[in-house]
Structures are given as C-alpha cells and as structure tokens.
Image (cartoon, rainbow, N blue to C red):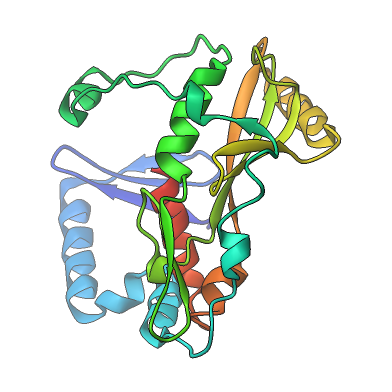
Length: 240
C-alpha cells in the first residue's frame, strides 16, 4: 500500500493514500484505531516527534556560550558611514495604533501593489534598526535592536528586491541597521530571477518590494558554537 494518512474525528474515520484514494472506516474500526493510537501515544510519546524537532531539541540542549570576543568588531557593528546609501529615518511615519486594533482589523489582500518608500522605511527602521551597542565585561559586543536575539548577537539582516517603488531604483538593496540607510548591492540580477518566479506562479503585479531575512550564522556561532538552532529562532522572531 502507498503511504497513507488516518483521520479520526467525532463524525467519521478516513484512511487516505497519497495517490488520492480514500476509505471510510466503520464505527468499530474507528474505535479500534483510536484505542491503538492512544496506546502508542502513552507508551512512546517521543517516537512521534518529527525528526527535525528531535534534532533541534538535541542541538538546543548542547548550546553553551563560548569564550572570547564577539565575531563583529565594534566599528563594523556601528554600521557604514552615515553618508552611504539612501537615508530612511526622515521617511518613517509617526502614525501608530494599539496592537489590539491592528490585529482586530487585519485582513489579507489579493490585489497586490508596491508599497510606498515611506511604508518600507517605517517597516525596516521599526523592526531592524541598531539602537545601541556596548562592550560587556568579557569583551563581547552586545547589540540592542527592537527585536530580541539570543546573546544579543542579531545574526539576521534585512535585504530587499524591489521593482516599481516610487523613489527607489529597481534592484537589490540592504538595510544598514547602524545608519538606517538603504545601500544598493549591485546589479539587479536577483530581481530578474524574482520576476521570472512571479511569472511562473502566474502572479501579475506592476511592482513589489520583497523583504528577505538573511542569516549570518557566524555572528551567533562565534558566541554559541552549537547554536544554529538559535539562528532559526531569531529568524522566526524577525519574520513574525
């Protein structure tokens, strides 16, 4: 038999193969299966964990801070010269609403259109800016940003692929957390690839701003040699 899925609920029991064939279970078979599943869950709960979760938990259990200085030197962490790139701070909106109001009015839109440069500036600065940096007693450099990060390492940087945004040249950009500037990263090759992917998925838009969370694992692994799982958690926080 092909790989299959069992679904048990109060109304019915189903067995479905990956090929798309399904069978409805009788009441007797449904209760028998329910009893078997309950027995397995009680006797071997860990065996039901996905392999990825097992690996993540094992890695998290071994995480311990290493000695020595931070991977990022103080001068690098403070960012480029303030004159480099496009300044975003003057474009940040001062409008704000309570989080409860934002969540209650949230909805998904299928009419896609590019954001304004002010929208991008507000998102990037509020989420990703470097607020301060300090040297700790053991010689490490700790960064303070709006979002938390394991060991204050902040391995996640924000990059953009944009097209059709008024006031911003099409191409590949990086948000500099230290200066709150957008710095262009060179030829717009990635933009062409992104456009091809949009066409392949039959998503038709006049413009877009795709924000990517780019992980620099070395920033965390220098402090936590077995801490790759911490980088994934940091990425989840940034994306949320």
